[in-house]
Length: 274
Image 1: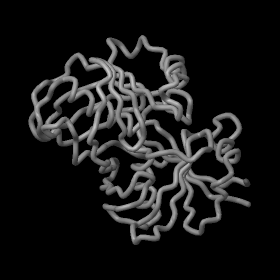
Image 2: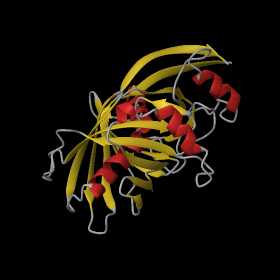
Image 3: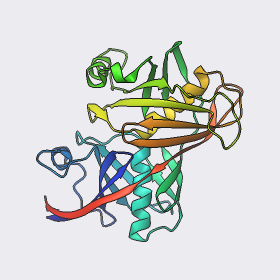
Image 4: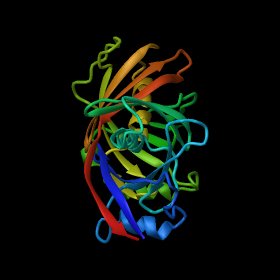
């Protein structure tokens, strides 16, 4: 069987995209997906996404597996990429509403950026002054450090994955406040600037960027910095480029109207026998 595939990346977080509206791809074959994502013996990617037809009259369904081949939870950068892919295929124009594992999402597709609306976050666990736990479609730890350059992300991430309190694994984000971080909070300006590195479960390594992790880090930075309740924008520098998180901080430290904004690009397309 021959498949046509496309390679997309969103701030360095890369994905194999397959138009599977005919539902022919053997998505239950974990070993196959793992092999396709392998950077030595396959196409190479952080994960694989299938674009499928929606049965509830949305534009499409996003099915996602990490590079280990196993179906995973919400992927923010991948969602931005699949929205761009749907636009490329002519399924949508400049806006889309689609299904993901954590529910319905809206995206706005520009010439070089995609804005993705995330689910509201009602609870953030404050484990200590520098450690937070929350779910932004995928489970995340956010750890604030003095210097992310000094962190061995892969080693520390793997160690945390083995802790008994995370039996299903967890994504770990190491965050430092940027030296020039602004502390004013005015709508449509940057409230904070942070630097972030992320260890992703399922990839079991550091990735150049993580969308749900960027959202988690942005919300926790506003909480830690005690920014007032209103609309905020947080600028994040990842290893793969810049992301913006726009959100509304509410009085009870919950967040709504959360948007993840950043670049996407089609890298190449090809065919492969599977």
